[in-house]
Image 1 (cartoon, rainbow, N blue to C red):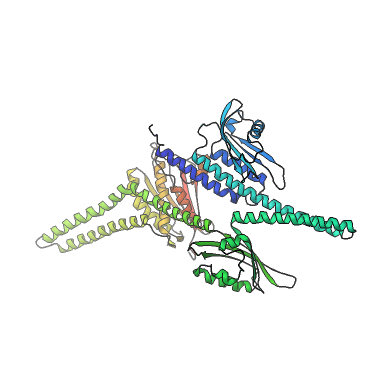
Image 2 (tube, rainbow, N blue to C red):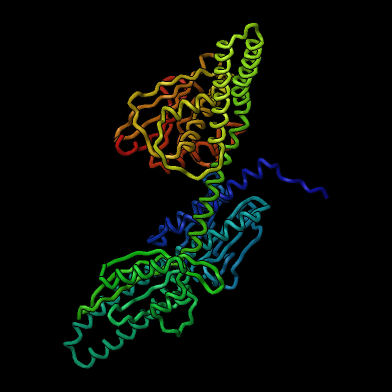
Length: 575
């Protein structure tokens, strides 16, 4: 049997979409922070309907704190006449049944006249929160990546719903306790019957509180968040179970500052001492990030927030929370490395299109050097030797050698792999250098480059090479946008000016085909491109660079043909 491989371009496109979907799913818990289940479910359904290209998706929720069981279904707009929500709910209720052991459903079923693939995923170990069901008419649904996305979505939804459930339970318990206090106050004036009712109510409230504490412990475990209290006067420290797990201590070990110090990374010991010193000085609130060095030499990153309160005797106590942010830190570092590497790749990919221009730039001074050297030899061989002419020719040789050296210097700076350097930059000079490096390529494409550079343009603070990369990307995009223009001059205009709010503005205006107004928001998204051979990362990286310089990058359609891409960044101090 011959294995048919997927086309590389389709594979890349699919992987890009898959990565974007993973990133979107990872962002859902942050969007759901503090939300109610009724706010979480619509977002989940819309995300799954879009990501998995489903015909319909269904969620049933049970065992909520502030609401009864609920069912929600989303049907793709194109399938609205084929699948009706009420009929889908009735059908899926019959298929799923009430047996919590029937956790996973994956089958082909007939709904009306349509045969669909059904896949369910439980929300909770025993479906205690609910269940998700996805439906597609595709026979190969779900593929491996779709099953993984569905699994991740279910886990993210479970986390969000459990947190919402926990918050609702905490609020419910708090409301019950408030009502209990009010009721108790009234019942104190009653007789023995009132006292018996108060005892029964207190027991019920204690049971609810224990249940709430169990939910809180589970929430801390899921969120990798531990809680603590520290009585400053006696150095008595109380930890939650999750905090013991984070630090890797046995549950019955008394917690002291010295014991904590044995886990803190040696380089962060001064941070610990500083925190303790300020806390003893009654700072009120404090927030710290530090590392732990575990016995197996692994490193954990912690984020601590604490709030100081005083009891009736005026004794200071801090109540705080510690979160294990190691996974987030690792993700941020990996993302930063990937962004840096992607920016370098974007610069290097520009090298292929600039090869002809660079060869022309270097070849001109080299030809001059050879010509001048031959002229100098002829002048020296004359009788008598023409020393003055030979001297002038030697000067021209040196000039052409410096020109070739300048081209190489600009090229190495543009494509070298260096860290960001903050310096005072003249945007006019930066634009001139990029224009000089690109001139031969632009001339080859019959592009006319014009510059309108402001005389009073202030200096800016930033990385000169990165800013030149942005200018180069805008020039190349403008030139590419005019490849199909034959009925008007291919004119490219670089303009600089002072912008509002003590900022400097640089814009690149082309006379190309422009872009659709509907696609304006997509222009700066990673991997979005209108070119048949483009990677779609140039504008995305350019925007990241400008935002790192506390600026913004945007695009507008011209009154006439073409578009203008502009960026604005703050001026350097004292300019």
